[in-house]
Amino acid sequence: MKSFEDAVKFHGHSCGGLAMGYKLAEYVTKLLDVTFSEDEELVCIAETDSCTVDAIQVFLGCTAGKGNLFVNKWGKTAFSFYNRKTGKSVRLVAIPDAVPKPEEMNELRPIVFSGKATDEQHARYDELSDIHVANILAADAEKLFEVKETVELLPMKARMYGNVICSVCGEQTADGLCAEIDGKLVCIPCMRRL
Ligand SMILES: [Zn+2]
Ligand SMILES: [Zn+2]
Image (cartoon, rainbow, N blue to C red; front, side, top):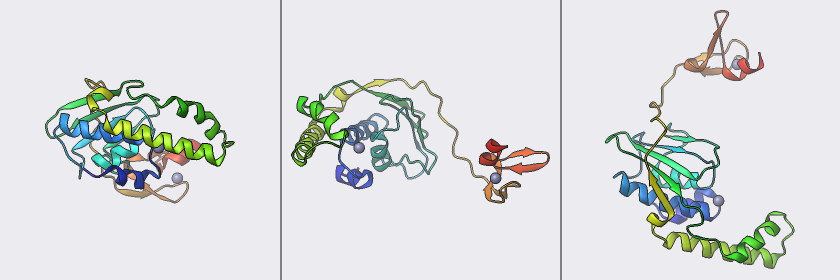
């Protein structure tokens, strides 16, 4: 598996959500007997669009462009994984405050995010955040996530479409995603404006 630093480079910063993603990925490779997904053999349905999703892309190869990552803005730190080869699946749900943030971090957070923090407060917040990240990385995955059965159906494999020209905007678009209106193909954005 790639290192936590690899994920930091991709994501842009180090944070608790990313650290949770690292532990999640480690856990999934063990539970579902998978490694980095070169193709679509491992599928992830995320119930949040938080930082953790970026870790899943880096460590497990479930990515937005490959058709094996589905990101839902449901605000739940829960992720379902499906191994297409074995048919095994698992849903991991983060246990709230399994690794509590340092109290001082909670106090500084609103100040830092209001944009009114001093340089010292910023530095202290980053320091505390690094401690929080280290605490998560050192924790047992079993203590961070509850293992449940999946409830969502396994999505279909990504489909390959041909290209056509939309009759309204004249731009190239995937044929399987166009609507046919009065015998003419119309792309989704144009359809929404009709
Ligand atoms: Zn983040
Ligand atoms: Zn169009």
